[in-house]
Length: 317
Figure 1 (cartoon, rainbow, N blue to C red):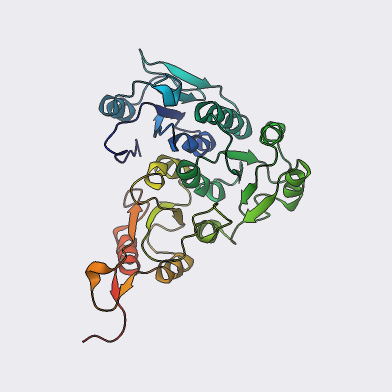
Figure 2: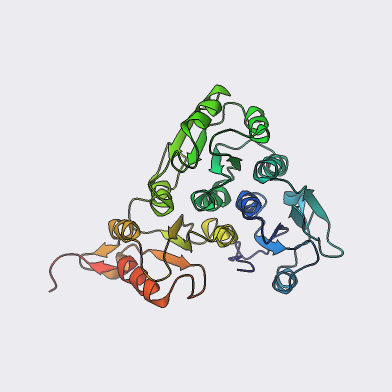
């Protein structure tokens, strides 16, 4: 995926986020820069130069900087080369916790206000962390990272800066331990875990979850969805604009190239749209499938079409 940028109310973005092609954690954290008011989609860069697909995307997008981006056309994360002639705000290269904390600070500076919530994700289990990108892009809630058994000092400092803001931890105890959640609570934050037994079911749990204004709360028909392979966190981050515009869909994961996981099939059937007499008055679901046929096959796409399409309810006349 080189870039995904749905139309932003007919306007091209004033800035883009540029992240290294190997930096999945930086990409997931940078998804928050797609939220209002910044609206910066994600592109991938390299230390040695600008990849051709990224250069082509920049030619099309023509980011020029503006008030929402602090005047910069590029928000550069880690060790990436900024294209010649483009002004940039830079986040220094570091580990997952360091970069995420710096991106959260950048988000606060550009947004001019603290977030309403914080997403806590695993720095060692990218499949459990990937769904954070979609929600960060939609909500403007930043992503912070933790080790499974200990909260990194950079994340501690970020949580102290945002004292009292609720924290939502993504993934089971194997990804983020109960000990870590107690550390977070010790910093004065209310914390809740959102998880499933595996990345597929954990993403579904997040799609269903709601706590006041927080969460997707998608438990009925009439929504957008984004489907990505569970071993492709970079694609999940690049696809985050699909969750922040258009059909505003939560990220769902499949762990197979060929077959729709049973948990995901069940979820799609739970939210399958239907009608009794007039299909033109029905709600519809829309699924974006991200990845080539080697990642998600045509056969699996056909399964998704079957379970997501509108169906007549009751006996046929």
